[in-house]
Image (cartoon, rainbow, N blue to C red; front, top):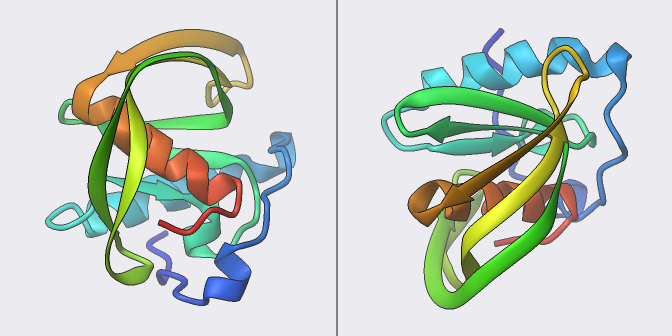
Length: 136
């Protein structure tokens, strides 16, 4: 189901709790909401649709992907960039890594590891900031 985008900075600044099996319906809502905003959005975190839980969805080179409890385990190639956010007005400077390796759970709660680089890595890092209550 497509959900409304949360724009409350106080809510968005809260750290998200770990996702559990009970949170799996949020994945479908995130993917549906991402698709509905595809023209101007490449990633969402669950808190952006009202759930303070560690789930993200993002455009992975043209295909939507969701992750539960994602965590960066390795990063390299730090650079500075400027980003905008669907939940906030304007854009802000931030630091990102060119390449990241993640540990996460898929939609069946299976543990996975995957590496990303470039634009996709940047999107994921932005959504992980949301999970940590960091406003970009």
